Length: 427
Image 1: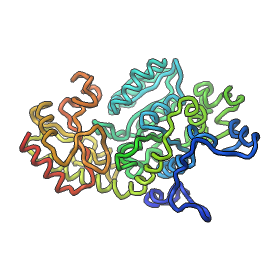
Image 2 (image 1 turned 90 degrees about the vertical axis):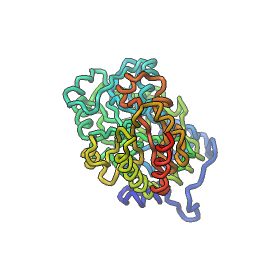
Image 3 (image 1 turned 45 degrees about the vertical axis):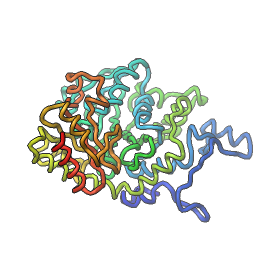
Image 4 (image 1 turned 90 degrees about the horizontal axis):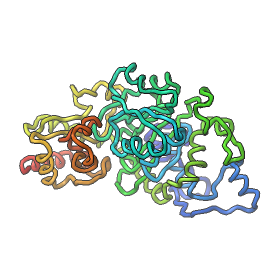
């Protein structure tokens, strides 16, 4: 379905347009492989001379339909699903980086991504420099090197809730001849479309709001098709020079705006295999059908919770960009005028121990690692996801030691606030 339709329509009907006699609902193509009549037909698929399906590790009709829906929602040129958001982060970078290369990243990003860049990719010979995303342009520009291949950030950082100045980061990236890769998980394309502000590639942990049910782990990569890889000879050889594993095929010549996603599919997915299962893609699609309905409710409830917390004596601070006077209020209004997300962070007077007692007293909100689904949940990163970091390291990553990440669901806002009220009284 064309992305000329509004997001509400794309959420419900995008990606799958059944023909005469075909299922009205996107089916699950639960098969590892696909049959052809002749050996030559199969050979053309393996040589990338024709499009089609031959093995689900690379492509599957269910997955492609869902990827197409997400692509349309973001306004992109091509997209693919991965087995997790972490896989999407890795593939997005590794698709254009190799040993000896360098990337620049905002420091206030999800802890798992921070570790992926700083530790795991370093083992592969890819270095990273972390920067303060709120720093002036000239300060951030100093982090770039001749071998820098990408600039990375999150539209809304997890869990610090910093709002990215996408236009600023896009200008920096393009002045350095590299793409801007943005994680749009928390905002979703319902509330923010980074391509419209200059981003080149968008990734998602579809595990979060896109799925909405907390039933399926997954990820997605969407390419805008706007970055001109050929404009920088020798900088992106994987895309602009012949690939020996496909008889000397050059991706930018053969696939145009689809070059980046095609390479990630037929090369990285072929060799590393982090594909999303068709069953999970099917469940993800069910979640996407209500994304446009759920996100406004998440934002409405989160704002009510944030406003309530602001008025409580026990609360030391509250961070939510929807609050007037918040550090990121203006950026939030610029990039996400309809709302940001359902996640609120705050700290309680008394620090870590008080935060832990408060969380243990909650009854409706569940203590879980997950975030951003229909059910209200809570986490204390310093005690859980970031517990390996010192207080100094936590602050450098944009995570205050007393930070409580409260993911506001789509239940009654009155019930959520009542739960917080009783937990504050019993902490």
